[in-house]
View 1 (cartoon, helix red, strand yellow):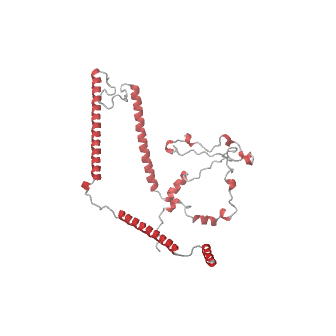
View 2 (cartoon, one colour):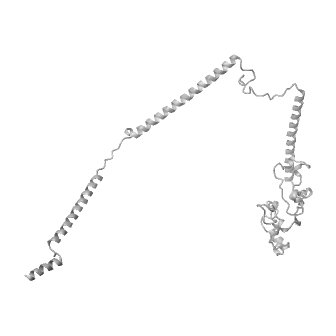
View 3 (cartoon, rainbow, N blue to C red):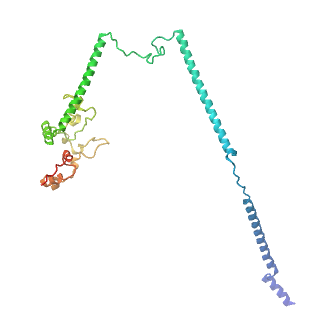
Length: 306
């Protein structure tokens, strides 16, 4: 009896032995997996059935399409509306013209319009100020005669100047190169003009290029005066000022840093390339663009046959 009690107590302590209970648990899990797989299978089949319910495409002729008919109907309504609007505008124009004509006719009948006033006649210049001179006035006639003589003289002078210029151009074309060069030298055409001597740090003023044609200027014309003369503060000798003051716009925010470009020149004038010599002149003569421009266009004389 003691041994049986010890075996039962040992069995209770060691836990339940593997038996049919554990097999039943595994069987329950298998059943749950089968149910889930069946649910998923049913869901997939239902989705396939829903996707498979597609409508059959049927061709609809153009004449039976609702969108085309609706668009055509809309276009017809727009066209009819436009025609009605244009007809209303035309009718309004006709009514306005009739109203204006009736008003003018009424005012004309009442004698409200005076001769020569705007609307008083059919002429397009009616109501405009008179621009005709009084032919009976001797002063007016004399001034007109003077203006006409000046106009004719101006036209004759312009024509004569054109003919003289054309003849001079033709004469110069017939000259040889040597004759043309001698004539230019006699006239001083190519002579170098004396350069104006400017003061230290003097301002430069350009006289401009407008209205500077020689045809309208004589010797004493004000446009031929010298624009290189010193004015205002340029009349004073700025070389006597301290070095710090020998700048433009001293004391202003826009003052310059340098006095002039000459004191910033770093050219070495003792370099042989900067000195005039026969070798230097020979080298410069072979450069392009430094020769006589007239000589470049001349035709070379054909070489004499030996």
